[in-house]
Length: 394
Image: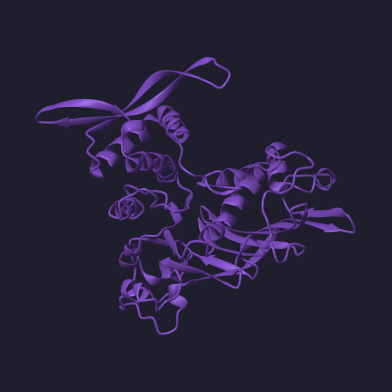
């Protein structure tokens, strides 16, 4: 579970920005609360709104980037390839900084990274012991070479100081059978997101095949996806995976799976391939591929423009899945951007962020940081009237 993330000099954010899922003592309890054994309250859901081009996608990208960097950078990058992110275009020579506080079960950790697109300058992992943090490892670039120290990280100093500068020590230690690194890496592998180096992954028909293959290998989740789609009033009475013959780019035949929607009425029934279903039905099926695993096993879903192609009434139904123990037994969290202002009527102000860009620099704030905004105010009306800013300047 995430408690907060801070970052700076990352895409359109030059100054330090923060997404906090920490709930202070003032807000009344909600179904979106996580109550930890140490008395901490965390949000299960964070919604981010703002105009096009304000930086909504960029504020989600640090979490997706760190998830990939910590878990996969050693195997999924070449020795000379750049680290896949960009600093702010007006401060390209400055380092980018990240700090992520998170929980694995009841253990609290803090991960810090200072880096350029060329090489890591500082990387550390700390674990909270009593009221203080103790380092697990610290890796620092000094005078052109890395210095490294650790406490029980199970990754030897001589090997660690030779690891190339464009990868995380955790991803490297995981490959070298460090049980500690594997625990951290496995945690970040539970993050799911629809953001890549270019931004949001735009929907294409290949996503349907990816989703179908995923659900074929996870029949329990396929059954849940089918029931949810039918309950969302999409005109479906069932979803079936059908094996079809296809031809790849080299002209070779291969077998794939494609979802077919069942439609039933008093006059009869028929099946349609999902390519012939509405874009909203297709998008919902792809979306569930990313949401259902974290609900089933725990983790964090990071979703840009979650409401893309979806009816506004479907978003509350999806968020309902995160509320209750029977649908979210492991306290999965979801952070998302959207353009659906009705979300302001559903969530509380400590669950809502606004993003705005001024003079080429993005900034973000949580609505409980807005002076004078009361918990019983009509946040939707104030936002629509422009009183909270972060609306298109038309």
